[in-house]
Amino acid sequence: MKQQNNTKTALIYAVDLLATRPYSTQQLITKLKRKEYAPEEIQEAINRLIARHYLDDTDLCQRQYQAYINEKHCSIKAIKYKLMEKGFSQNDIQNAQEETDIDEIDYEYTVCLRLLNSRYTPSKADKLKCQGYLYRKGFNYSAIRLAIEDFFYNP
Image 1: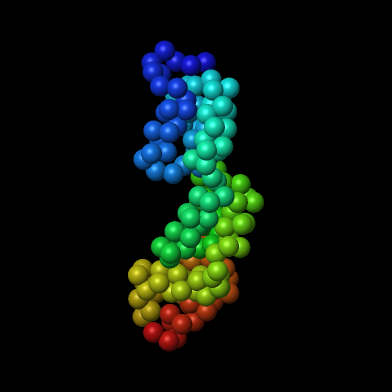
Image 2: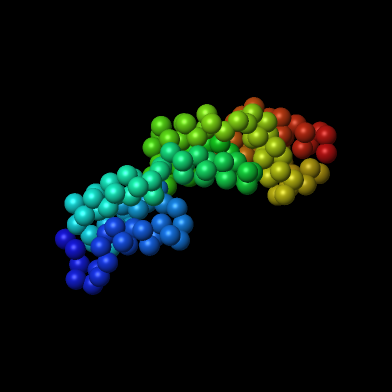
């Protein structure tokens, strides 16, 4: 049920939110529910936004996936998890991954090595602790192994 202090319709509030930054459909629905708009009003607003191309989860997922790749801070697994948390479907995430033209092992190797260099020094670091750190971050075992080898034996 709509609260008395909601002076804007769900559609207008959603457009105001989208004017500041892009949101996934699920994020927008969550925000509208927090404002206690009626479910029917929320669904009508979402349908109109999709019809007018203000909401496009496939495109937004692709752009956010590419942005995370460009940052070079996360494993592919962590990127997928972040996108799932934002409400993107498995299908949208899979499409974004397929559309992004990168060698995933090379990407993860590069990021692993970057993280190791920023956090540890080869002479003082423990190999197993470094491996565990990268594994907990979600990196591929092959990328970890290559990065550890280069970090410790080819500084």
